[in-house]
Image (cartoon, rainbow, N blue to C red; front, side, top):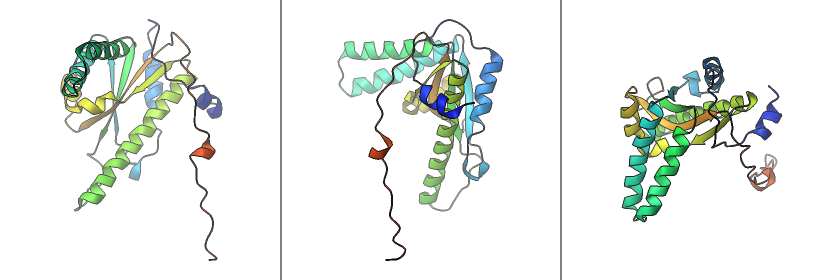
Length: 204
C-alpha cells in the first residue's frame, strides 16, 4: 500500500452502487483494523458486520433515538422527519456497515476513577485507530466508506437491536460499498495552523 497516496485520496463517501462487497474483501478490511496500535496490546476493538435486513433494523433503532433527542431539543417536526430519513437512507443505502465497538473486558482496572477513565479513553483511541485503518484499506480497494459517530448517542439501543455482548460499547458505524460518486474534497487546516514546536529550554 502506498500510504501517502491512500491518505490523500480518502474521502467520506455517502452514496454507493448496489454492487456487493465480497466476503474476502470485508475480511481484509477487518484484518487491517486489527493491525492498529492498542494500549498494553489489549486490542479492545470489536466489530459487527451489518448487512441485509439488519441494516433496516439498525437504521430504525438509531432513527428512533435521533427523533427522541431532537424532539426534546424542540426541533420542528418537519426538520426532525427530514433528519431521520436522511440518516435512514445513509445506513440502508450501503451494502454493508461495520459497527466498531470497544470492550473494557481485558483492559487494566485501577482503584481510582481518574486512571479508570484514562484507561477507557485509551480503548477509545485504539478503536479509532482501527477504524481509520478500515477507511484507508477501503480506499486502497477502490471502495467508499463513511465514518458515522451516531452510535455514540444510542449505544444501549444498538447493542440490544443487534444482540451484541453486553460489554461491547458502540463507537462508530462505517458504511462501506462501491462509491456512486467521488465524495467531496473538504478543505483542511494546514498543519502549521494546528502545531506548536516546543523550544528546548534545557539550558535555561
